[in-house]
Structures are given as structure tokens and as C-alpha cells.
Length: 144
Image (tube, rainbow, N blue to C red; front, side, top):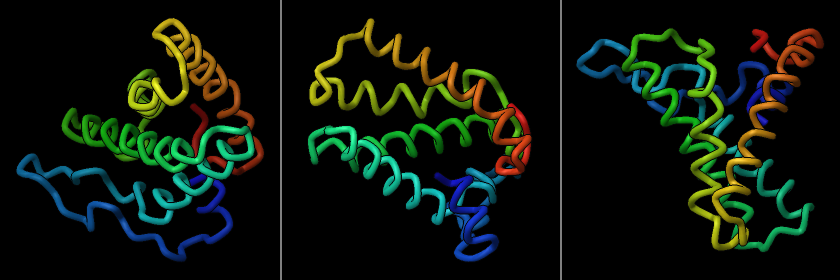
């Protein structure tokens, strides 16, 4: 959703979540690529998709919120490790944003640890497979 929203709105509403603040390590908290526009679009988009898939209403917004919190946590860790913004680090890019919502909502989703592992595997596979296609279509700025 953040990629689609960025392509639709271009530079409109592109406000960094961390407001440009840097920590004592002189790196941004999250970076300029993490915007309020993308954060809100992800929560709403995930919510709509989950609702259309028949998930309970209590799950739909929380899933998007937890996914974005996982995504922000990976950006935070990457900045602390000195990785530049939008850099790709396999595992760290997809694991928190898929794992965090599944663990937080496993009771609502009625899934166990094995199912969580399978879902994360599918998520990683789809991300790795879809990313180069989105890059070739000029939707994504970099291939995975």
C-alpha cells in the first residue's frame, strides 16, 4: 500500500513519521521513506483487504497497525546498524512486519505456531517473487 499510494500521490502528504529527528548515533529514527501517508495507507489497505477476506472487524485495523509497527521496528534496527534508508536486508525487512501481527492476533485468527511459520514463509516467498515484478513495472524503486 505505501508503494501504490506513493505512486498515486507522488510527493503529496509525504511527511516522515520521525519528523526528521536523528538520535545520538546521528542516524534518523526511521528515515524519510517511512511516512505518515504510507503508515495510514497500510493500515487502511490492510484493513479493507482483511475485511474483504472475512476476518472479524476487531482484527482488520489491528493487523495493519501491528504490521506497520513491525515495519517501523525493522527500520529502527537497520538505522542503528548503519544501513541506509530503503536498503534491503533479507529477513529483517519482512520478518517483523509479518511476525508481529500474527503473534499479537493469533487468538483472534485461531492459528498456532506452525501456521504462523507457514504464513510467514508464504509472505517471504510472495515478497521475494513480487518485488522484481513491481520493479520491472516501475511501481517499486528497487528490486528486492
